[in-house]
Image (cartoon, rainbow, N blue to C red; front, side, top):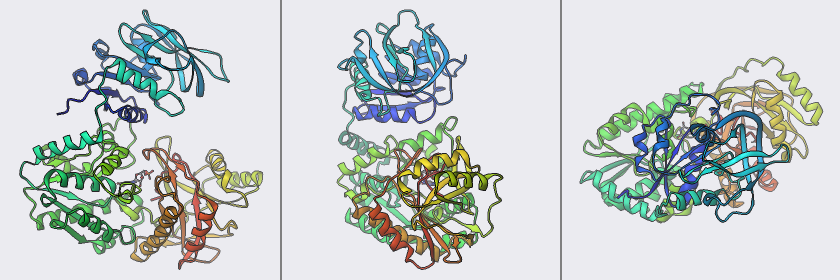
Amino acid sequence: MDAHDKISIVDFGGQYAHLIATKVRRLKVLAEILQPEDPVERFAEFKGIILSGSPSLSAYDEDNAYDSRIYDLPVPILGFCFGHQEIAKHYGGRVEHTQREYGPAVLTLRGSSPIFRGLAPEETVWMSHGDSVTALPEGFEEIGVSSSERGPAHRNAAIAHQGLRRYGFQFHPEVDDTLHGEEMLRNFVLDICGCRPDWTMDLFSREEEERIREQAHDRPVFLLASGGVDSTVCAVLLGEALGPERVHLLHIDNGLLRKNESAEVLEAFRRHGFDRNLHFVDASERFLSALAGVVEPERKRRIIGDTFLEVFQEEASRLDLRDCLLAQGTIYPDTIETGGTKRADVIKTHHNRVPAVEALIARGQVIEPLRELYKVEVRELGEALGLPEELVWRHPFPGPGLGIRLLCSDGRAPDRTPGAEEALARLAAQTGVGAAILPVRSVGVKADLRAYEQPVILWGPGLLPHAETLAARLYQEVPGVNRCVVDLSGKGFKAAKPLAGTVTRERLDLLREADAMVMGGLRRHGLYRTVWQCPIVLVPLELDGRGREFVVIRPVLSERAMTARPALLPASLLDELYAAISALPGVSGVALDVTTKPPGTIEWE
Ligand code: XMP
């Protein structure tokens, strides 16, 4: 087993490495992310190495900490952007700061390098860099020159040393804007590295089942089953490997789930043969009393996490699972991001890696059958295992559930940011829209840092198609703002008053109703799968003396949740949702969130 050919990707930061890994895996070759400080011996099992780009490092700097002995390895190496420059530098070329280049460019191919086999003489590629290779190392040739509308020709945009099998691209073949990036990667991975494309989901699941049987021996396995895609696919895979009777599933209702969610989850597991060891606890009361009166988002998160662990431990000892292995639906980005925290900014802690679980992992008592898969691959596996579409394509749902979608407040308006009102008034006057700063704060992310700032609300006719562009201006011009929403009434309001609001069953029930309306609407309009995730948020606000909850709909498009764009919804759906939600008791208004991430996160918290 595990005799697949593999490619290693050295992660120099940002999201490049994950994107490259996904693209390589689409070629049916397993790609794994390695860190620059990993010892050179780690690379021995791979048939090729790809050096990623970097958002923060510059090859112009002298010392970039990684073991340069990787260049002595007898396997092909391909570098993109920063990686490309590092290759050039290592072999004696020159890297210099040049004019920044960002966006599409035309790559004119030179010579006939195997890495460009089958491509046209001119290719559209995507550039994003400020340094360039200005002198080639000895033995290297220029195999591509790029030019864009805005600048002079860019030399050494692609370079190669055929004998050493070293290749560098100044551009990013892993992004879709490089139109034939996939062919370039295929040429490298399949032809130059000689990898066999045999890593399929079918094979993966058969091999993983074998591994599960080996690790479990005759012990039963215990899994927390939230009903999300990962834990559900994990449960079914364990069931296939060990038989459902050896799989204990525990579903905890923490009171923060969606409407009817627990009942539906339990029913789905029963349908898959897990009736004997299906355990359920309704712990909603306990969670709600632990959360009573709490306002600060990180505290809410911690309380939910701690209470969860307590309930879980009590249940585990009640069920006497001492001999069980703990199974978790951890997926690949979770393991990478928790391990490689130096470069990835940690905005949240992964509950799959709390100290108690780490200790079990050290003792070999944790089984994580999805640890090598990306989300999209987990879904593919779910389909291969025969799970129904509505389960496999469920939107991601956060562990703390609706708890982070109920904005809490002590009723005091945040301090005014100096200059914010004036800047907003100027922008509103210039663009002819109505605008106000909402007297609440929500979590966002600016320049990789957590930003707890205020949202702006806009209103006016014909606004929606331009809202995202207008929002981009807002973040530039109005200080202290990390979010932008559009009022779906179109009319705006005169006064918004913050109210005190914490986590209560009453608020949660209202949120559940609104959420069910939106999910239903997305399904009816055939948009559930297009939209990646759509949190609904309750904000405790009274508008013009009416209502007590302001409802925000936040549909996003995303790949891996690290960045996101607002998803456009058709006017007919927005009209329906506005009418239905504003008729719910206590609702003061309904808005659509049009914030990108950054500067807003997906959840408001
Ligand atoms: P943000 O709000 O940071 O969210 O843009 C990114 C993605 O992560 C989900 N999320 C969480 N998932 N525990 C989880 O399991 C959490 O504490 C948590 N916080 C956010 C969020 O739903 C989105 O998909």
